[in-house]
Image (cartoon, rainbow, N blue to C red; front, side):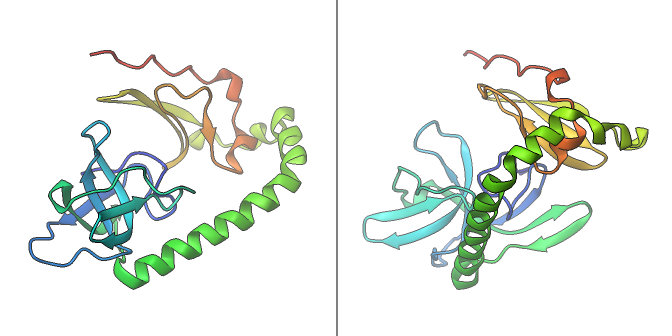
Length: 199
């Protein structure tokens, strides 16, 4: 399956092709990245296991501050993610102890980055609004928008060369553009997200 979303950044990125294996009789471990059927809407979700006990299995995205609200049972788990394919390269996805270490480190770095960005945000916003750096972008990698249709509606992605630099999911109020790429994008000229599909 292909990964979409941001809840598992930086472990997974939109467009990653996931290699998954069923658990069969293997033990589900804290730190594993799993694919499971969401109790909320029966869609497939990819998150990391944060606890396994007699009550069930709890999960959280590496890019999320809160644990998911549901408790899973083993029959809701499709399998474990063991690797991803990104830009013609295969990357191993660690589970268990090392998976937990990776997730904790990623969250700590994200917290540091968030505090730093608060201090620099006013300068960054002014520079982005000025548009000075947009003129430096070569034509070959000028930002372009592509659309993906899935069960929840149409997702828009902003590409710069081969990199996905921004996304707008159905229902999102605005584009989410990764730093420092807002410096090179005229956000006001980007299309609005199509309305959420109704069944």
